[in-house]
Length: 629
Image 1 (cartoon, rainbow, N blue to C red):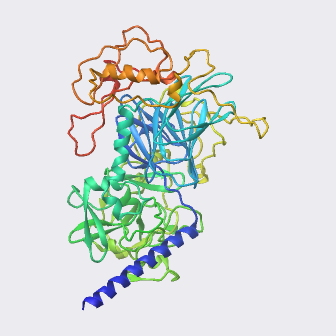
Image 2 (cartoon, rainbow, N blue to C red; image 1 turned 90 degrees about the vertical axis):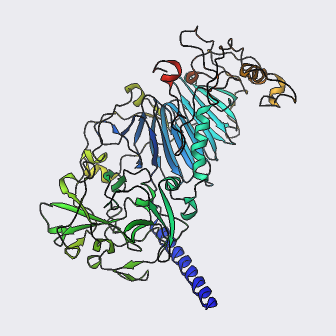
Image 3 (cartoon, rainbow, N blue to C red; image 1 turned 90 degrees about the horizontal axis):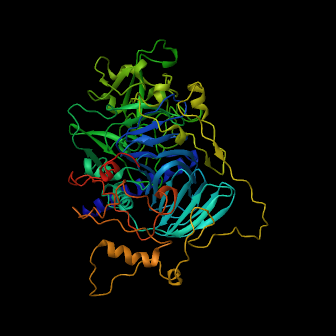
């Protein structure tokens, strides 16, 4: 008996593996389908703008970003965008971050001003991340930690954790950036370039590390392919259970009685995927763009299916339904219905090329393929009009909204109880609802736009930005836009011989008129970090530590040290000098290189889920008594 069970179990594993391989092969045949970057975290007032809109709107978590989208963080706000399994970009307050382009092996962001960090724990060989700024473009091709600070005239680019990059200035010079360096690009004719040692990590950098560590420590990641975003959120908002029929399933905590999938959120118009679901739940990314929903013992559970090599993102895994037959002959559509797909059921795409829409598709699904409760082979022809969806037979599972409100406001879904499930037919191909400008945000409220001088700043790019995708142009006519399109500076081609190497400024020196750094001590080239105190040596305070670091790291004479205040907590170090103090000998941090040897401890760490509420990320208003930079 035990031997038969082993044979059955091995046969099941082989079948699941072959099914996953077949699904992956089918995905490869379809070509590359982009996974949009995910707005995975935001705190404070964050504004969002999408091409075609006339005003900025309030951003909401789990929003899929499209090319041309711009985000702006207000006072004491920040955000996080995930664009890879372990790749993130985070923006501090008063920062404008935009997604310029996304290709199969390249993604390009724009930082017009402010502070942003790119934390890349993994990066496939051949993939690149480009960061466009007003004076230069930085190309990242290696894992590491990269910090970008864009001021009015100067841009700092700092590499850590073995990060390497290449910079191309606005006048066409290309230089290599080595690990643990601080490259300062200053506007001018020509553009001035200076190189320094990277300063010590501050509280902002440590907070970035803590956020990224959550991904590596996620327990839910073992149940999902590595390409599925948001696995770490599942750890805090639900639990996993093994069911014989479906394998590992995830059950959310805290959902209300009568809740059904795809009932709390909103539909938004995406330039590539057209109608896309954005769920209100903080865990609402993976369960609504991958896998299937099943009903077990009176509760809903999310079944990701067998782990496959290459998951495929979908704007929503639902079946759209129409009451009363063929949607193509209906006039004055009263409403639109949808239901979550169940185990193994195909999605009928309403996005993509014309030949792709309307036909059953199992892209990214590694489990069995089921139509009308029958497992089918990959070569079987399926008649779309005859498909009946299992979840539609369950009570209170079909959701509906009036057609004139679809995509224009948050879903105030109504569970359908007027008609029988047999009276519905699936919508074939494009949905019978046209978008409006409100659909670009799903009815989100208005938000404060960034300063005009920030949103219109030209940035450096090696490519001319693409026009909006044809579906967006056709669906939403052009009109006056709230943010004029920024200019893009394409660096001129270098007219130097191929054998000539672009000059690199000496380490720690520049030709700029504003600063004349002193020569570094000869020993600095060999030792790049402050020496640790010898055994038995007493260190009096942090000011002494900074003085020891300054002996090896200072570029120029440092100003008199600020008075050391009493430290209330371990996270708060010596506060900087008050704003009323005499001006320092150097320009502000975002317009010139920071003083070496000074550790910026002006930020605490944001609490992770489960941490005490008193461990907060202190804003600048609390730090210096004013809400100004």
